[in-house]
Amino acid sequence: MKKIILASILLSAILCGAQAQKIKGSDTMLPLSQREAESFMKANPAQTVTVTGGGSGVGISALLEGTTDLAQSSRKIKFDEKQKLQEGGKTVKEVIAAYDALAVVVNPANKVSRLTREQLEGIFTGKITNWKAVGGEDLKIIPYARETSSGTYEFFKESVLKNKNYKNGIMSMPATGAMIQSVGQTKGAIGYVGLAYLSNSTKALHVSYDKGKTFVEPSVANAKNKTYPVLRPLYYYYAATAEKKVKPFIDYVLSKEGQKVVSGIGFISIND
Image 1 (tube, rainbow, N blue to C red):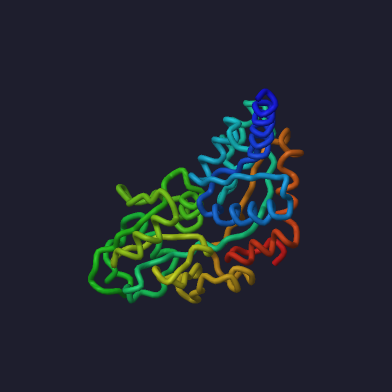
Image 2 (image 1 turned 60 degrees about the vertical axis):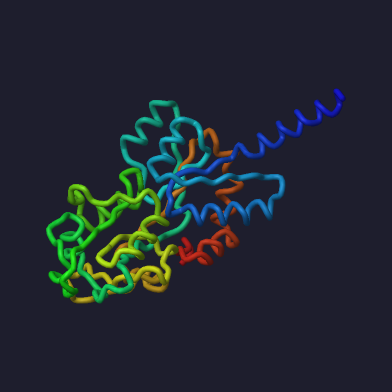
């Protein structure tokens, strides 16, 4: 009986140790990290990696609290976040795992197929409120944004809104899946998602960053050749003290096999 109890304790300790490598954060990166973790564990059966979302800010906070080994983030770490980590005695390290294009999506029934950056700014800041103003039908615009802890929320504000504030009372979506569902079910809706999340339930708009001279479709090809303007890196952050622990997974993600996973799910490889 004692032997069985001892074996159970040892097994529990082994499992707990194996599950200690955790990744948390960006909802955009969730499918990427999950697929990388699956592929990595298949190649390294002794390793266990668990992945959860919650938003880039949530992941970086978890890194500060010591409840995650890797923070996945669809935006660069902020100065104050880095400072907090340093104050907590943690030197943070940054790795670019992949690139992503941020697509603006509308309901498939919407006749509008392209918008300029200035028009998008007007819509999401509340200055443009009817689709008629941008070539569509006489219909109220219902903009959706990600929640404030999301790196995608921050990046869209920085790149598309040029750091202007979102309109007061904008509908806030807790996750990318909720964004897709809401836009797909609401005729006047508009939102934004990572390239890997595009599906038939929404319509991706062509976007212009040169005041309407050229409109570019959000696609892997256009992201690779850098003609699509809303492009961003996707990051992993970790404490320098945890480098030995996370390095095998990071090395795998950056390897030829790991970057095949990146391309396979619709993100852009760092090698492209």
